[in-house]
Length: 383
Image 1: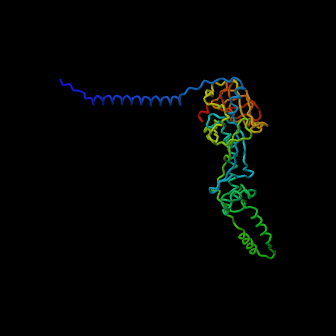
Image 2: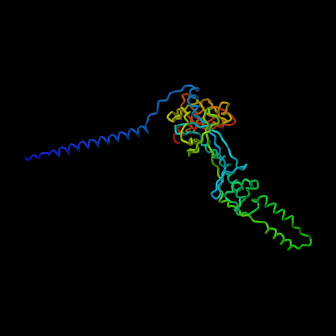
Image 3: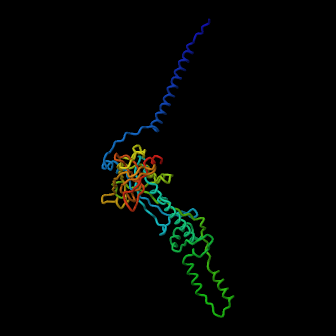
């Protein structure tokens, strides 16, 4: 039997290959374990064990700086042939509403109600009223705006002639309901100068009327198809607890697509939660099982009912605390409680006795107190 001797070179090559394979195996193992660890941390990280705050005062002290007063200004805008500007007429006046929001992370994200961010869509009745007003405003603009007005003059022309605008405009009409004062004056003056004597024939009278009509200039109006009227935000700002008329610019980030879930996401314009907010209302510490909320359990709200009217004090803006009890089991979307609340408190966080978020306040009855409702906290996660 012939025995083959292994040369020194072959022995060295085998050793190198073994080491190289071992290195590859270790590298792959490190990559796999690192990826598994990252994904596990990101998607399966355990919730931190929450500490029960225990009293209303502790809950207030912990979260008062995280709860903000929201001020939202909005108005009617018109776009004509690409030129956009805000309408300032009495029937298109700007509105300001107040609500409440609260910080949930360090990137300036705040939870509030959808109807605070889009008040014109708050109810079906409100939407119908707004749409009807938009139609009227569109017709009014079309009834006065003539094609000889330059785009740069649209805004001043409409403001100056708004008192002559009419909603009885219909496309295809020339003058008439859409005329402004100078046309009416021209007509009456011209008519006053004509005198028809008793011996004039019927043909002469007809000729005078024809000549008179021909002398009145016919105006051409901008087509209503080129006029768009809509409602939108002028600005949204928030004020912090203990601030002194200092408003922070914000932008609407998102609202719930579900009409039954009155929630929205607001964000500070620079995407940074203010440094004075020492404790955000963490979404890791919410009661996401609303079936566990029972009538008789405590409910505590921190917010701004009555908006700026009640928030403003001699020493700055102050957030308020109100408490009550859960009155009715959750229906999966909302829960009822006996907390005192009114306009301005929309978007307020509602806690249990331990300081865990259970709901976001969104509605109630104006006529009587103690019957108010919140969207259960689990729906925040879907935003």
